[in-house]
Image (cartoon, rainbow, N blue to C red):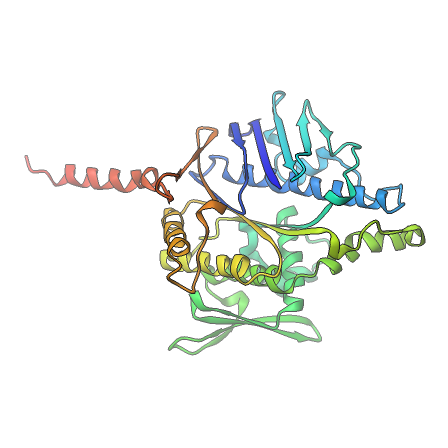
Length: 387
């Protein structure tokens, strides 16, 4: 299966063409360059494609009335993209199957067309996927879990509540998790007042504190590791299918009409994880170790096929990817490694993307990310010159 995306004239994006989206894709660039815009569009269109898969599955299974209505204005508003729209905005998302068949969802002139409209997907090409977006607002999770979730009507935005719902499900399944890159353990305790989260040191300085009182780096990185562990080891597609499909059929009295065209286990399944700025509040060493943790969980110890997309400001992460590539090429370590052929790294600038892969050397080009350091060094030399 080959996945592609093109975006034209959306907010800071002028013309972005991603001809093939790999299982590990990274966007790096300045603030406001459009990294998160690209990632949000990708996550949204993956979700639209997921809904079309479910719709097709239900129709093949003798359910003619679909529970899913496509309201693009609502989706764009939820994603914070509504104000980025221009009269010339076009978005095209495509999936090319092994058979050569291409399913496309297109947004143009304010309307959706293509697969998202009424085209029925072939029964043997239907998939059921999990789409997760881990936003930069994840640092609010500890406080919200302690107080905010009990406030009736409290709302902190679409992406925060999406990641919080995933975190809530994950911590229902996990009792504890080692976070080696921070020398801590994360623990979940269920009480009559709900779940309580704590952080326990595994280093030389022993301590135990509530998650909400932990450091900023802990609060932003622990949710990533929790969700990576959950999706790679504990996530149940069957439970997700029951929540999103069977509950609807039961509530609408259509369950007796349901004649599955395929069992869920026979349908292609994949987890798609999108992470905004994984490096938030982390020292460079910890940034790299967090990436190792992600790679090991999602690509080396995973029970589900997984795709990860990151948006970042960190040149440390990009440089570290070359170590993961070399580890995979030489196979000299049992630790984190990542195939060069399953990775894409793009610099986002001036409304476009620039491929940083050096294909004849199997490296990521980090030279464009060193310009600030070079500028500081040159200015320092100028100031150091004596008259």
